Amino acid sequence: MTPGNIVALLGTMPAFLALSRVSLADTAILMSTATVVVGGVKLGYAYAAERATSFFENATARRRLNMAAGTVMLGTGVYVLLRG
Image (cartoon, rainbow, N blue to C red; front, side, top):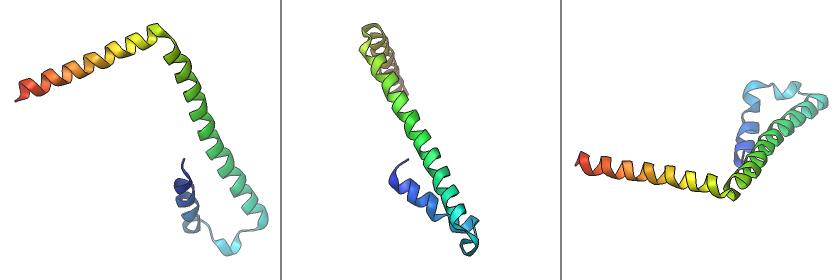
């Protein structure tokens, strides 16, 4: 989530909550929940990036990925050529 997404998410809170009835404890719960959710998403992104890094360091995996990408590009080119 980007900061813009977070602001948009928090901007919709008044539609679901009566702000005049939100206490300090409620605010702490909302902030904690938002922190855990956003932090969990960011942690997932970091884990995926680490896994991708180790994947791309493997020469065999990189070669297979390049072959697959080349096959898709070749197939797309043939499709466009035959379609007219």
